[in-house]
Each structure stands twice: as structure tokens, then as C-alpha cells.
Length: 466
Image (cartoon, rainbow, N blue to C red; front, side, top):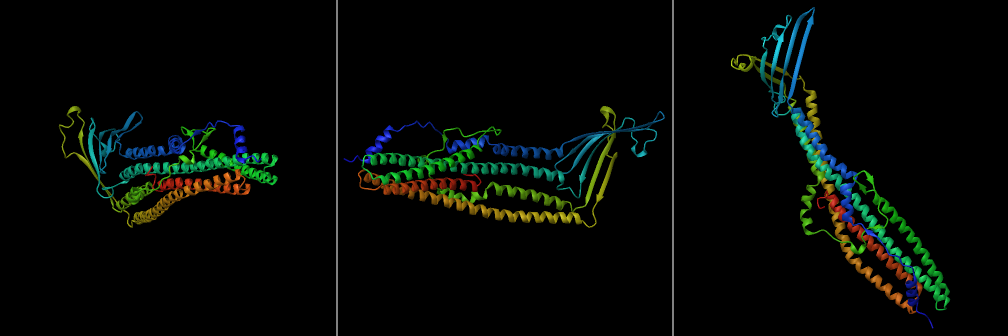
């Protein structure tokens, strides 16, 4: 009497050694959360904000009030030739006007007559006004405006760096996911081939199966073992690659712990774009951080252009300083507007070639930047639409192919039942099994493509959906 092959397989499976699989699942959300908090590039992205603040502080320093003191004295042959003391405070303002005030005391036998002051010294206050160049904008005000824009640019730079980091880490995770689930398929395939080979050999020894079946079963075991080893290598390598994104406080590199695995294919949420995204697509593209960064840089160039245009004007600076003798608390009792110093400084290049050339260069840079941003916007739009289309298409393919996997499983199950009853051949079972393996691998590949397409869509939109 023939012993059914199914009973032989069951007996082998019961007697086989089983080991509890103690694994720890690392989800995509936990992985990305760790990367955003601990990766060195994430730390570097946060430094961009401090860089912007430091640049703004530096530019504001040009408007800091300054205290100054100048003392000069000369003694020769026990005689004081002169003693000049001048100290005060200068206050630059946002309007280009400079306020100043101070104290001056000059004495000596050989003092220049125009520097002569009362014995008690002079108090003075004053104002310096750029009537020509520098009236509306100067280098200090231009630097401050650009520093404000640079602070916003730094925020965009941070978002760009984080977006690139998440995209690189995300694609690595889904590669890890694919290699792990591929490994599971080949592990199961090898287990089944090995169990069947043992059962077929046992059946051949009992005279229930032809000896040639043992050779075919052995070839299948060897082939599956080779595929299992290759998939194990790919999983090990993808785990090592994933470890490059795991850090402790951006300083200490970590490794994926032994026994840590990604989510299984059954737990993947397959999604596609929704109607809200289709409506918001244009506005999201327009708000892309790379485009915002380019627009802010164009504003910086516009500040440069305005400064270059201002430099076409002649330099004409007016200074007015009322003065009064220092008399302690009563210094201002004898104040009169008739006591003052004033001055006028005028300067202009005859041909203005340097200034006109600088203005032309500023205009050319602006034109070039505007052309670049238009081209960049179209490229981003194309990439976003292509990624969205792949996202939607892979969702439809997965829904369709899930039924193909089920059908292939049903065919294999039926073929195995016929084989157990002796109404099918080992060749047909192996063919059905290979077909089922291939459909599983293709299904896993589609799942990976779907998640990568979702990630690519978010990436091309600047991470605005994250």
C-alpha cells in the first residue's frame, strides 16, 4: 500500500526542529523619527538656523553706537608743545544719518590756532547727512537687509537638508524591507523543497516513488539554497546600509541590532494620492523650499542692484556740529546757534565706469536667476507629477496583482493535493511552486515601488506633505 506523500511531509514537519523566532520590528515611522532626531545631517540642518541668526547679529553690529577717545600730547625740553583730547559717541541710524556728540579740549604753546579751545574745553553735538549717495541705501543698510533675507534662506536650507535626508533614509528602509521579505519567501521555499526532498527520498525507499524524483527534488533543494544564500547576503548588506543612518546624538554611529527586521509585507499600508493633493499640487510646487530659497536669493540680488544704482549718485555729505564751552551744569545756558562747525564733502567719478559696470553685472545676475527659477519650477513640477503618477499606478497594480498571488497560491495548493494523491508529478509541483515564488517576489517589488513613489512625491514637493 502506498503511503500518501502528504502524510510523509506532515511527519517530517512534526519531527523537525523548531526555533522560536525572537525578532524586533523596526517600523518606518520609528526609523525616520530616529534619523530626524539623531543623524549628523539633521544636526547640521539645525545649525543653519543659528548661522542665519549669527549673520543677522553681525549685520546689526554695523549700527552699534561707538565710543571713541583720541589723546595726543607732545613734550620737548620740559615744555608742552600741545595736548589734544577728543572723545565722544557716534550713533549710526537706519536712515543713513549719523548722530554724534562729545568733548574736545586742546592746549599747548605750539597748538594749531584752528584747534584752539577754551581752557574748560568744548562740548559739541552734531549730525552727518548723506545728501547724495547713501541717502536711501548704503552698504550697512544693504548688509542688514540681506542678513534678514539670509535668515529666511537658512530656514529653507534646513528644510531642504532634512527633506534630502529623509528621502535617502526612506529609500534605504524600503530596500531593507524588500530584501527582508524576499528572504522570507526564499526561506519558506527552501523549507518546503527540503521537506519534500526528504519525503520523496523516504517514499522512494518504500517503493512508492521513482528514484528519478529524488534527483529532481535534490536539484530543487540546491537551487533554493543558492537563492536563499543570495537573499541572505542582500539582506545583510541592506541592514549594514541602514545602519549608516542610525546615530546617537549625531556623534556615535550605531548598528542595526541582531534580530531587528522591517515590517512584513502583510503590514504595509498601500496608498495613493487623494483629491486634496491634486487640488493643492500647484500651490505645493510653488511653495517648494528650493523655489522659496531661490526667490529669497533674488531679493538679495535686488538689494545689491539697488545699492549699485545708488552708487551712480555723487557723494555729497553735509556735517553740522553746534558747540558750546564746557561750564559744568551750566554748559548749555550760554548755548547759541551761532557757535558751530560745519562741512561739506563732494566727490564723483568723471566717467562712472566702475559703477555702471557693477550695475550691469547686477542686472545680468538678476536675469540669470529669474531664468533659472523658471526652469527649476518646471523640473520640480514634472518630477512631482511623474512621482504622483507612479504612486497611483503602483497602487492599482498592487490591487490587481494581489489577486494574481492568491490565484497562484490556489494553483499550487491544488497541484500539491494532486501530488499527495499520486495524480501529479514532482515536476508540475515544482513549476507551480516556482510560479508562486515569482508572483510573491513581484508583489513585494510592487509594494516597494509604491512606497518609494509615495516617498518621491513627498520629496519632490519639498517634504510639505510629511
